[in-house]
Amino acid sequence: MKKYHYSVVIEKDEDGIFIASCPTFPGCHTQGETYEEAMQNIKEAIELNIEARKQLDEPIPIESVIDEIEVYG
Image (cartoon, rainbow, N blue to C red):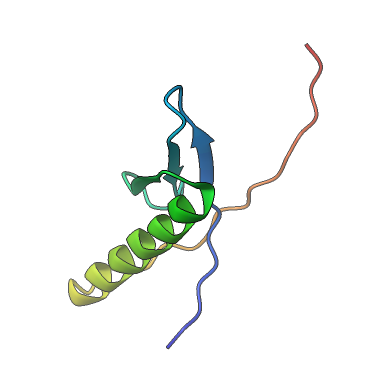
């Protein structure tokens, strides 16, 4: 089984729920009541996305380069 690495974004909404997404897979979003739960849920969502793409013989996306930049405002 091939190992993939993807960046995820975790944000806390106004109700305290953690929202998780993976920019490499548009539309791949989930949530959790804790950071850890959101991380586990997004991992499962990505794995299911990869599994579905394999079954449909679609390409598995490669991680885009994500970097940070410091700005002042």
